[in-house]
Image (tube, rainbow, N blue to C red; front, side, top):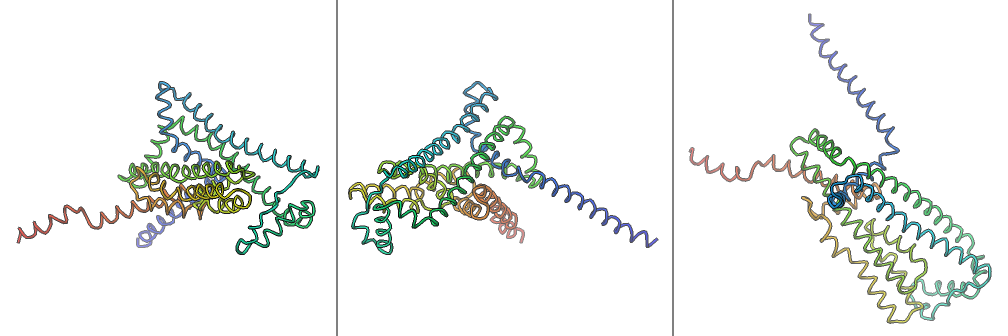
Length: 369
């Protein structure tokens, strides 16, 4: 009798362990199968959430035609990615061909540096010597620095290949976003049920928080980065800096990573001072400083707008996520830290109770006494 009484809990525990093990096995197996597509699905969801308000306005303007609105959003999105990429690649190829042709013909020339370059601190003498050698005899300069230039070319080629793959993945993400937009109501209902299953009555609030956070990061981080890159590119183009597209892309990457654009613009300022007039150089320097510090004004206006979480929490989450998980971490980090902040708030409220009750409770106690 006692044996059967003791065996029943043991048997139940074994069955629970087996069930949990099978569930864990299935979940892990599913994640392994989906792992090549997780980033694609996540980017598609981020894009769909970001453009959904625009999609609604477009659909209403088209008389509720859902398919046409999805098609237009997809075509415009692909064009936004393809056209600048095609222009950038074409410009880069043309510049490389022009450089190769002029180098073979011996007509390529580098402007000699001004004498004032010698007086620059730390790097002045070495920079002046190397620049002067390249302007006097470019072929000899290339032969002397052959190994270093090969290393730079290899690095740039690898980075270019990575950017190309990233563009293709982003285009695929736009197509995934189109599928999400076409089934927006069903997707939202499914996510709402999931959030309610995980957090009960707080489910709708968490879902709304994640959506608003993603849109806030899109505008407050990616939008500001695009503004800074465009403004920096316009300034560099105006003063005649070569390979403007490359430097503009680099500013965009740095701004998304929350690094200051002056990391690119400062060398450009030095370069402009070396060959342009003082007036033009000073104007470009002021413009570059305005571009570099524009985010200090724009972020308080755009980041965290309409989100029930302080801007600092979203910014820290975006930066921390970027450091740990790359560009995807901008959104994931901000959403997760926002969740943590709200859960901490709920925990504090549940521990302390309703403030109104805390005020009225001493009065009722005194009356009873």
